[in-house]
Length: 216
Ligand code: ATP
Ligand code: ZN
Image 1 (cartoon, rainbow, N blue to C red):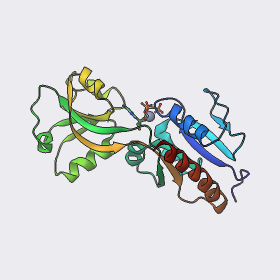
Image 2 (image 1 turned 45 degrees about the vertical axis):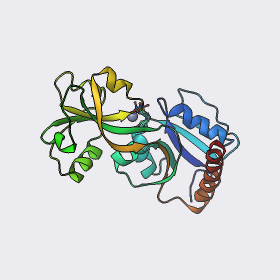
Image 3 (image 1 turned 90 degrees about the vertical axis):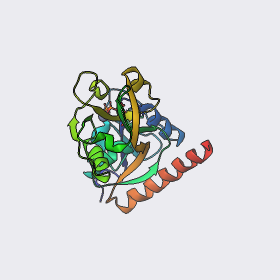
Image 4 (image 1 turned 90 degrees about the horizontal axis):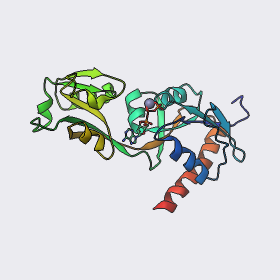
């Protein structure tokens, strides 16, 4: 019993790098939503779908809690948050990598160069996993933004942050040394969808896969 008229609820980023492509994908799936940028939610006129606009960091939690049934969010956020959600499909946009970078002048040979260093990041869980897998002990300093300036102001020896072109690293005098995760936007779902919602998800998924195929 869904109690909400059997509508699927999907969470997408309210504003930021994933917002436009998320809306675009829904449109390409033939789903019309009135996009009021400052609204919290919107309803599709031609598919039983309600769209919630949220901060990307909050999307895995909302999907785990079944406040939303589905979400479009970066793999980097899904794996950092460690919520109980299922990754259903890669979406082909929001591509980036989570990488370690050090000052350009600094000597960097291999992963063991990080031993004993201080690493600033917004992704402490993923960095810890990477260090453990490579038997490196380093200090992780969690900061929420502007990670790339940390080495320049003496806050850290290295950083781990999202990179796409590398120009932000370059402008901050840094060089990329290790990629710890390749990421793109994915569709996640709550693990306990009822049969009705799973059917709707299957319809949506079929459309998403058709859109992806048409682009290849
Ligand atoms: P919010 O206000 O929703 O918390 P944010 O500032 O955390 O937004 P954005 O910078 O808009 O997030 O990035 C959203 C997602 O876009 C990232 O989590 C990542 O999956 C993806 N992304 C793609 N390329 C990049 C990039 N070069 N830098 C950062 N994120 C990128
Ligand atoms: Zn965010």
